[in-house]
Length: 531
Image (cartoon, rainbow, N blue to C red; front, side, top):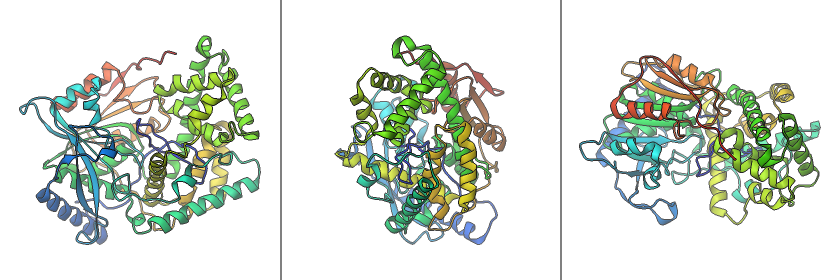
């Protein structure tokens, strides 16, 4: 599942043609360790990364005002960093990565370098990160005094040699088929869509696909570090960005200064990526129930029932109505899931989603259509959504080997759906193109501690739907000396940007002074949204 929209929403669209914003869980790793002994191809890629970084250090970044249509106001500046498409051939084809920055807000003496950010996906753009300064984001104000905030579009994303798998208008067209199959014919139709989507990726983006891997994006990150003139990287990664950070820390341990990873994808090779997505389905069901409990507790505001069961009945009723006659002609079950899934994703969506839900039952169907239906006139937004989904699919499918047996997919998802019906089939169809992927699938990197790795700060809520808590525990085990901050009884995805002093103060202390607690810390949850 994946992260997409500018609001830093993790959102993914059903690749099999179901516009399901399946949750973007994380990114995948595939190949060699830089500096670790390995096969000749891995050694070539490690050497290629060294060559590319040296070249970038010499070239630097030519900073200038950002293009007007990028939506990045002054004094944010933009530029480009060239990287090899294939690190095994560093003098071969190059692609350009879009980068942006805003200088530290403190004095020259306070400056500690650049803080580079990745929001997740795979497929998310980091270019809006410097806007945390221009919009005066209070949570990040202290860190902004010390660091330049730097964002970038990873390879294949946005302005960085973007890839595509299907015509964007066709991609967002609605209504899609209900992701939950009623018959074998429904499954056959979705399998056909998934196969066609994979073929479309090959036809439209074939030269890029073999190189759309997490290890290559980690190498790109090191080239960006060099182009910025930074001897060591300071990094903030959220969601899939944590997997990117884990791979970077494994490949380039001596190039890291400080790293914060927030809402962690499990780096276990057994999880990347098939099992990780199944785990997500279970976690989404749990957080969906949390949200329903909250809606029921606030029945005075929403009038959707005073128990979780009553709210669920309303959901099933809405779903059945939309399946029989898509609301407004465009909102069917797939579009409903795409919209409603943001509630289990983010606490910031609890009130907006419940409000639209409530309005529907009060007779206002237009609010639901406006919220859940695609806007075919928003061609730029639709291009961005399709691109984001293409990158998500390309990275997860190329990073690791996926089951090719439909019987396995069918058995696993049928079993899971029984007790976890909210996301299971939607997520399955979104990932099914990986079963017929047109390029070689890699073996994920073994994430672990190598000499030179600094202490890493890991932040995670216990009820996160998109990246279940076990992922943070797994990375904590693998990165020796790391510290884990657990936000107990909370489940919003992306913890470090929420107001919770127990967490915010520790993130500041680490990034500003390099200080960590002597042992792991458990924090109380941030404030629950109020209607």
